[in-house]
Amino acid sequence: MKRYNSYKDSGVEWIGKIPSSWVKTKLKYKLQEVVTGGTPDTSNDSFWSDQDNGINWISISDITSNGREITETKKFISEKGLESKNLQILPIGSLIYSIYGSIGKISRLGIPSTIHQGILSLKTNSTYNTTFLEYYLIYFKEYVSLFSSSNTQENLNQEKVSNFDIPVPPLSEQQQIVSFLDTKTSLIDSLIEKTQRKIELLKEKRTSLINEVVTKGLNPNVEMKDSGVEWIGEIPSHWTCGKLKYLSEIISKGTTPSTVGREVLDEGSIFYIKVENIKERTVETPPINYIDEETDRILKRSSLIENDILVVITGSTTGKVVILPKELSPSNTNQGISFIRLKNKSNENVKYTWYWLSSEIIQELIKITYTQSTQPNLSMEDLGNFYIPIPPLEHQQQIVEYLDEQTGLIDKTISIEEKRIELLKEYRQSLISEVVTGKQKVV
Image 1 (cartoon, rainbow, N blue to C red):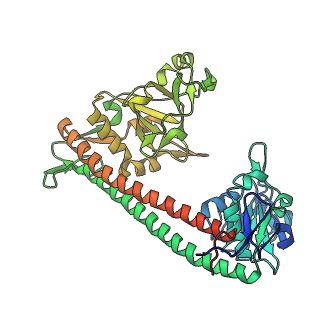
Image 2: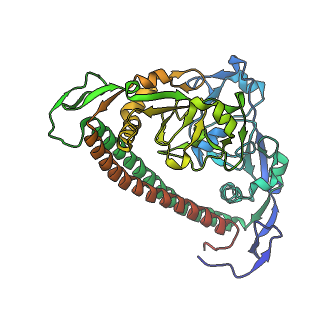
């Protein structure tokens, strides 16, 4: 791509210099219509409906989770709900923009929908290409917080959005830029999608490998026997099988410190691990939370030590399981996390048990077992009653060494592919930024 022959100052810091043939104006001068949304009374069941009979209703989370085009919604309203807030049903292709919470999210409608009050629908007039505006708002998301007001969360309003400064190329050039970006971003998005699929396949391979090894061992020719547990099936004949509680010294859970003590933000205090600190296969290091030594003394029953196995037992991440590393010992935890302290605290036994609890077999069993009220909840009793195949200790060590090596290779590949996705996203954003602000010329 080339640069334009001459530039001028836009007078706007985040736009910078623009081509001399472009102008800078306020978004409101290029809008034909702005549609606001609303939320029917959630306590009135007649205002809401099911998917088969209802009208699509888009919330902020629909924009967050669906990306550039929205093709489904989580909730649906009735005709009465539509009338109660005088809502419009927006046509396919409408451009929508979030102004509450996750501000600056931009999407297109792939289905006719109504919208939440935290969303605006922006329709440009005949002098401004709607897709050009869409690309500009994708670029502008980096700066949108400069315009927000905040109490508990960031907010915009229609007036603030209407007063956004925007660059305006000649209409024919807007269309050329849109055509260029549509082509380029489509190629980038296709690469991202293929890479994401590759990561999914790698994770499936890792899961399959763990399942096979922790139930069948490393010798494919070994004599097998019935484990006596239907969902485990056959295990090597020299293995045993028992409940986790009989192998454990302690199965317990934590307490929220606000009920007995206090949380502090003080380096040198005791690490306090919350559910959100339990990441994929590891604990966030260090946790951002701490408790004082007096609170830790009061919460002694939930004090953690190195090699305790932590299991999330409540919320959307129920079943996540990690081993407490040495650098986070001693620690404490809350009631959303159960911890298992094995009688045999050797590294190979702890690691083998962790692999077993991480396996798809146990993860699926957890989904079947936990109670569902407002959120998933797994009891310590249920956890203790899970069966586990038990190889001889020397075989556990062999299994752990093998899985460490093989899953390590898979994880390394996943990490490379995840970095590739980040670089592709950065390139996509950079490309959009350069073009919609006129730093690079597409023709």
